[in-house]
Length: 216
Ligand SMILES: [Zn+2]
Image (cartoon, rainbow, N blue to C red; front, side, top):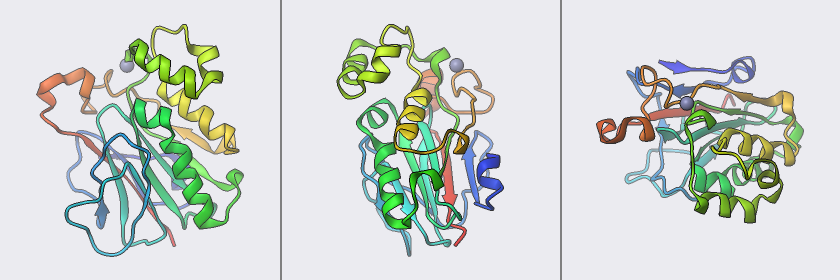
C-alpha cells in the first residue's frame, strides 16, 4: 500500500510513500546507494547495477520512478509546475542538516526553469518530534548551519526534522500552500511502517520505498 498526497495527485503526478504493506515496487523503480549525503543525480534510461551512490534523484523521464528508501528518515517528493520534472530525496538528520533538500530543489529549478513558487513539495511519513530525542552533536551541527532554527528550537528535548525541512523549503521560496506533509510518525505506527528507532534489530534491514514519476 502506498500513501499519496492530494497536492501531487491533483496534478496527476504518480507517486507514493511506502508502508509495510508494499506488495510490488513501481514499474521502472530507480534506487540509489544511500549514504546520508547531499548528492542528487539525474536519472533516465535503463536500470543501473549496482545503483549509484546518492541520496536523491531527479528526472523528466516518465519510464522511471525515482525512488528512495526510508525507515524513519524523511522522504521528500518534489515536482515542477506541470509535473514534468520530479525529484525524490532521502533526508535523515545528517542529510537534512547538510542540505539534501535545498540541493534537490536547486537541481529541479535548474532543469525545469521554474521559479521556486511553482514547485510542489511533499514531506512523507518519518520519525517526528514525538519520538526523536537527539544528542548534542546533532544540535551543534544545527546551531552552526541553521542558526535561525536553532534559536527557536535549540532548547527543545526533541528534534522535528519535518519542521527543519519545511523552513528550508520556505526560505528557498517554495510557497507554504504548496508544501504538503503526511504527518504520520513511523515510530508511533508500527502497524504501518518499518522504523529504525522503533524496531531495533527486528527490522532486519527492511525499509519503505517512496517514489515519484514524471507526468511528462
Ligand atoms: Zn512518534
